[in-house]
Image 1 (cartoon, rainbow, N blue to C red):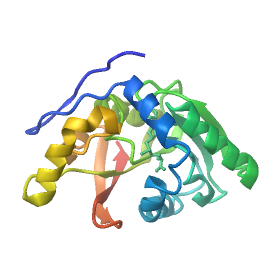
Image 2 (cartoon, rainbow, N blue to C red; image 1 turned 180 degrees about the vertical axis):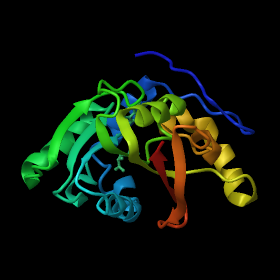
Image 3 (cartoon, helix red, strand yellow; image 1 turned 30 degrees about the vertical axis):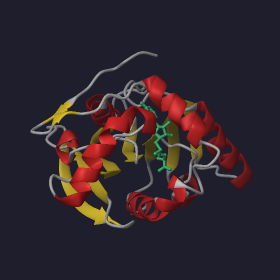
Image 4 (tube, helix red, strand yellow; image 1 turned 135 degrees about the horizontal axis):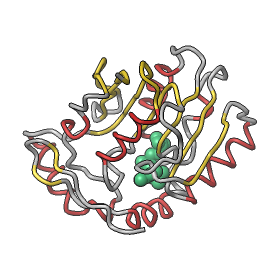
Length: 222
Ligand SMILES: C[S@@+](CC[C@H](N)C(=O)[O-])C[C@H]1O[C@@H](n2cnc3c(N)ncnc32)[C@H](O)[C@@H]1O
């Protein structure tokens, strides 16, 4: 897997480069400790986002960057869930969870690049990506792929950290950005990177707790 390059966010300068190898290496390290470290920190926003999916009529949902599958037990059993992730180590933990917890609403878990999905256009009623869009090598491709595989009228939900322009947090984010490839995510990631796509109409934007660091975005597939 090679370098997939940068995408420029409007008015933000270049995003730090992360490639697939960085991601795979970073999440092979994270996998054994993910659930009780970053995963514990993000449990509340994860619950909020899945609760929003659970208000939708029964449908097929794809979760991109499903990781160790922390979210999977939270989905209502009326839905059928497909999860994809680039990291075999993270996905192995998701598979174990599905088997141990008898999560029969999980249809498939596949090693796959969220920027090059093997599914047909409109194959899903909804797509979810939690704490993923700042991590992928090419966020523009992933947004385009989410829009492609969700049917018109369907739902796309993103939960992510987005960077701020001013104040102490902005200083910290800009400083940390130089370690993006090592961290496997981009601390400096403006929200504009994911907005303004004609096929995804923004219908909701709200902060979700933990520590006011995360934002939930809900789009309707036009
Ligand atoms: C911070 S973790 C979030 C995991 C999960 N969504 C959660 O909330 O617990 C980011 C996940 O995105 C995955 N990932 C990164 N780039 C990816 C890509 N291009 N395609 C699919 N998954 C990717 C990583 O392997 C990792 O499992």
